[in-house]
Figure 1 (cartoon, rainbow, N blue to C red):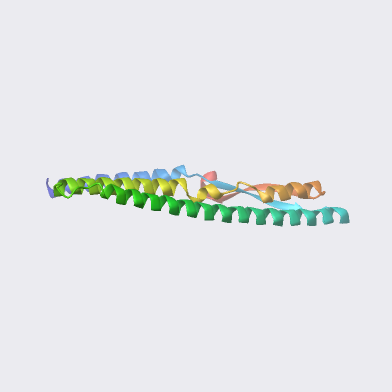
Figure 2 (cartoon, rainbow, N blue to C red):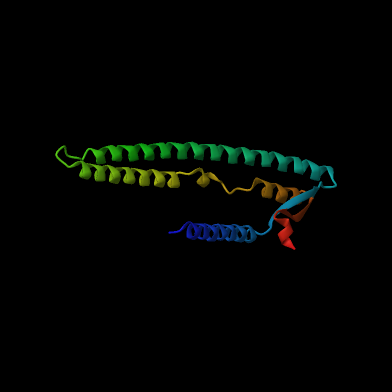
Length: 168
């Protein structure tokens, strides 16, 4: 292959990568978030009610944090147990080798044992990730609902937070 052919191939490759990057940036589009403004109730009773809402929100957030902490500790323990099991399986796999086997056969067994261990460790990481620890509980939504029940007003506004120039 000539140098010119390599340079042309590299240029085509670079253009392809650039095109993919441009497509990826276009596909992301604008991202929006909802912002809330709140107006306190007009009565003393309503404002006292809102204090209870705040107290309940604080309890909710504390419960969510405790549940996430417990979940992460459990996931960490399960991940440790799983990776120890993978290592034990690996050692058992290597123990199957016989002294009279050829070096090529022993190397194939080692490779298979390593691959099996790595696959199990990857599965452990997937099965026991922290992403499963998100409670999905929305203490803020509960607070806003309570706030309105107390007589307060909640106004939601959808605002662009990124890639806003693509919203037009």
